[in-house]
Image 1 (spheres, helix red, strand yellow):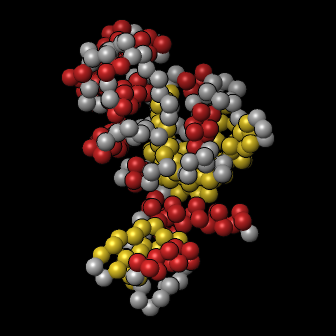
Image 2 (spheres, helix red, strand yellow; image 1 turned 180 degrees about the vertical axis):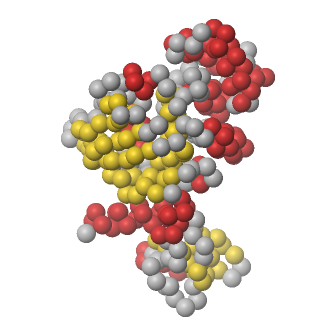
Image 3 (cartoon, one colour; image 1 turned 135 degrees about the horizontal axis):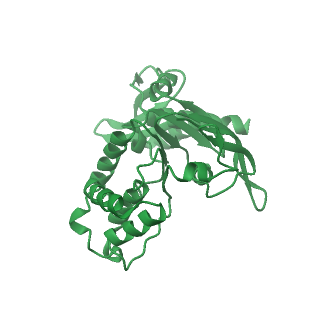
Length: 294
């Protein structure tokens, strides 16, 4: 099982490039696709879900060009777009039955699968409530359920934790980890913590270009020895942020504890910290920005 993105570019009206010559190869596991808002993540997801065609390049599923033959992947695809629509007058069971029919599931298989999924996403007690009365987080869980109806080999979820409370986000990340064994899952987000616990690989994109694609351990190794904590008075914080890439601050009685990323120890008083994926993400995105401007 393999999904390949081969030199994919996408240009919209007005000459705006959302993707530029992006190449990526995926096998079973969870890919965390990270990037700032506007990086091109949603455009890439739509191309892989065969909703949008690329301007150049192609996407290949198990040696089949799905740009030319989209049905080759649609039957094994589960997709939760960033903007997920519902029918407010239907309840969860009716809505999922309708979508199951569109996906070609027979009635008995659909009923069994719907029962399993409503339990899985914590909505079994609300199965007969109209979707118009659901909270934002509940609607998102219905979206997750519909993406899993056909037990997909390729699961694409775009900003899936939008509208979920912290407990629901933890539950969703655990769900992805459980599902990842024998399928390819692409989790697109700008929130590093959404991929930190579950991703087996991480790809970072910015301005439509791939910055890096590697296991989390490799990304962490790239910033090992580059993350520091420095305690400064509040009045010096603004100037320090102008000089260094900062990934966090915490005000305490002795001053502001600043977490910063620098190739060399900024001052003797700064102490080295263990890097996080947030640090690695900021490091790659910042370096790409600096390189683009030079």
